[in-house]
Length: 95
Image 1: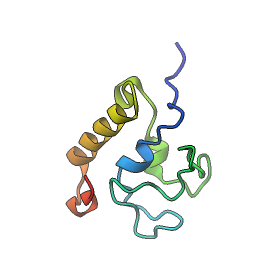
Image 2: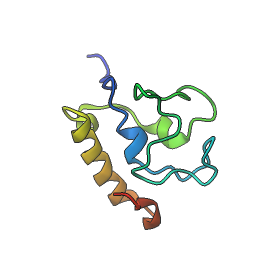
Image 3: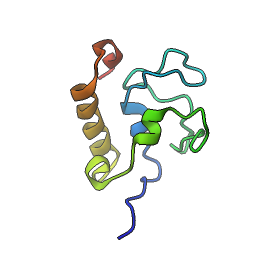
Image 4: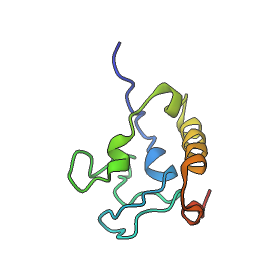
């Protein structure tokens, strides 16, 4: 069975989750709900596979459970996950 693939034009994971480690352009990380500055207009990661890509991003793997049937499903799932796992509630400013 092939691995579940990212949905073209989605990018929910690049917006919904917070990133607590520094990334290029955001030395203090990224709050949840803010699109990553490395998300292309086509909703693709511009630093995918590069060493500067945060570990949290490398750790995410597309799955039917996480991605659901559309971008809204994915955003809802990731928002819930973010709320359940956020050690610093200040990173949840836009959720």
